[in-house]
Amino acid sequence: MDRFDAMQAFARVVEAGSFTKAADTLHMSRTTVTQLVQQLEARLRVKLLNRTTRQVNVTADGAAYYERVVRLLADMDDAETSLSNATSAPRGRLRVDVPSPFARMILAPALPAFHARYPEIQLDLGVSDRRVDLIGENVDCVVRGGTITDQSLVARHVGDLQLGVHASPAYLERMGAPSHPRELEDSHHRIIGFLWARTGKPLPYAMRRGDERVQAQGRYVVALDDGNAYLAAGLAGMGVLWLPAYMAGPHVASGELVTLFEDWTLDPMPMHVAFPPNRHVSAKLRVFIDWIVELMDVHAPVSQRPRA
Image (cartoon, rainbow, N blue to C red; front, top):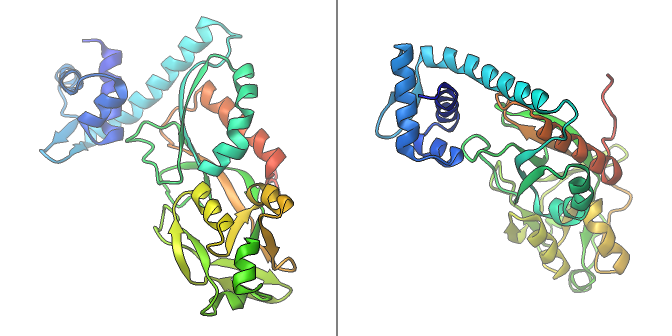
């Protein structure tokens, strides 16, 4: 039995909650992963996992052992990296998931510069606005807008998206231009709903003008869970939509969108990079997060940096 492989297999089963998912992320067969964990239990003479036909749960001894194994694996990774070459560049495969508009308009155009700086990093980029199971899907980190409500993740605040309200000229010609956000509640106006992954439904937007505060909700005839499709529906004249400045800017400049309620302000949408707390922050993950911060400093900087 290779003790390193056995400990790695055990840690992945605990994180994924499944031998099958652990095997997939380790690129091993389920049988191999099962045998490695069984051999580890035999060597330690301790039951690490309780197995049923439906789920795998870690025992009390297994939980204590897991915490030490995670630290040991991280130390081994650091040791190998430092011994290979003290000045070596970050390398290896990095799995990331980012929102589709952010990927299309900000991240993808900047990838050549990232690759030139870190040519040994292989980036597997998922592009979605869905809720990602970082452990089960073996994803190193996600970039997401809004508040990170999952307490099991570490979230780093990397930027703030300035929001505005917009509609296409075709929509305004058909429905008229609202002069106050409350008019969006009128029967003849329509918004385009964005289905947030954590709730599965559109959320109201808080808008302020002086001492006046409005929660703008409105009615929708279409709601989408993808940012690019959301924008496309707005350009097609389906309704009023709320957009970050980086998404709306080119279309406002071209006349495809008109900005509404310019004397009102909206709270900025925070952007975060989130990753599991028990996932070792490797050199490749660290430089990727720092690069995302650089991108956001250009396109949507944090409104007020926290004091050191």
